[in-house]
Length: 252
Length: 199
Image 1 (cartoon, one colour):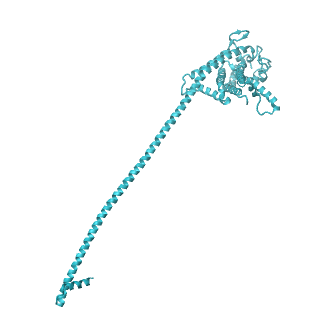
Image 2 (cartoon, one colour; image 1 turned 30 degrees about the horizontal axis):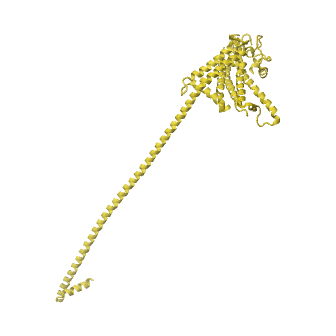
Image 3 (spheres, rainbow over the protein chains, first blue to last red; image 1 turned 90 degrees about the vertical axis):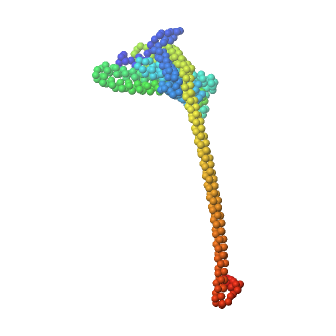
């Protein structure tokens, strides 16, 4: 592959749009920040404008907003019970943010916010931070029962507790890496196959004929990426619900 | 994973800055691109403060906006709709109850009217029967009376006839006695004789 012509990594580059530097930290407004703003603006505007008529019988777009609302609401209620509904705004905004960021990233030349590990890790850290803070304020040291499952023989307890601690600590990692890796891998693959189309077409008639294959692949991958965009937002929200359930009911 | 085939695998220790060894261990794709300049952009710690800051700002505002504006509104719409549906269902149930009550009242009235009609019919039937009976009895009585009268007349006529028969027999007997004997029998003797024969 001609790496100089079609660089699949190029789409992940951070470009400073408005350089800002405070206290030695680079806090520039970058293309990443621009697309965070775009994500928030698109999601907010959609939710706000589609529900502005407050119709008793919803229009199509209004029912999309209502479906998203009820979808996340039911998800949270199923996983964490009615007590979990106090986290509904958090889970709903996480779901909408990730979903819209993923979908925006599918547009050519758009930056994918969720393809940067620090962004997904920030969101995952927010979730785990909420779980830890809420767990300790609600249950005090009783929250540590999370690591001691019921009905385990005493001689196995050290091992089980160790495993539980490791699994808890790896949660923010798996939560962030899952989303990041899916978006990154999908976009690189898309770029590589699209790059094949361009490279092959440059080789003449035979190349143009041959480029049909990677083109078909790119089209299929776009559909797959659309699915992944929804799926990863869903997975992120579901796991958030399950972790919040641990904060609410640490006794397993 | 796709990532591994897409770019060169080179270990990049402590790229994660504040979180050493976490992502790097679980994700084999950690590395820098084959091209020489700089690190792989998603793992470039130089971009982390800016991304985290803007994520905090944008996501924080998004969270507040959803919590304060969007979610009360959507929740309100859904609640109003559910209330409306419950209300309509209640209304329908009440109307159904009223309709049922009306049907029951109608059926009760119908049953009452039926029994009343039956009673009237029965009464009319009975009185008609009684009248017919009375008329029949009256006619029978009149007929009996006429029959009695007729029988009395017949018997009186019969008695008169028998009496006449006696007189004729006496006359005939006295005439026969006169003709045969030539004497005259006393009336009393003849009468006694006729009586003894007639008996």
